[in-house]
Amino acid sequence: MNNVTDFIDVRLFYTKTGSAKYISHLDVMRAFQRALKRSKIDFWYTEGFHPHLYLTFALPLSLGYESVAESVDFRLISPMPYEEIVRRINAVLPVGFKAIAAGKPKMDAKQIRFADYEISFEAEGKDVEETLAEWYRCFDKETIIRMGLPSIPFLARFSSSFLRT
Image (cartoon, one colour):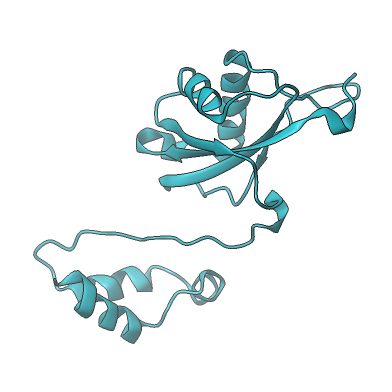
């Protein structure tokens, strides 16, 4: 068995777009496990009765959302250039996923608690403030507080200053 100190931590950044946005987090984990095994990279496996790939996804997205900067951490047992890791993994990832970069993690995935999100929509031929207010009413008060959504007046100011240019 490998000694616990013999591994190299790697953080892989990837995109999840198109029909891949409808793949649940558990299925994303399975897809990555299969793709990583097919990539023929020397990954570190957990020790014990049922060894498996060590994967950590920081702040996984909910079902139905696309992303251009998701991350997954894993461990290698032998050094490999980060560009080669990205190339090999891209060769075997399912449609809708694309590895964009790999590197040494700057912090533990458990310490990542926040992310920036960009919400975009089209309001072609409609009043922007009215469309934003309609979207805002789709959320209940508990969801708005948990998500930290701004108030309607802020959305109206935001739409007037940024969306009508």
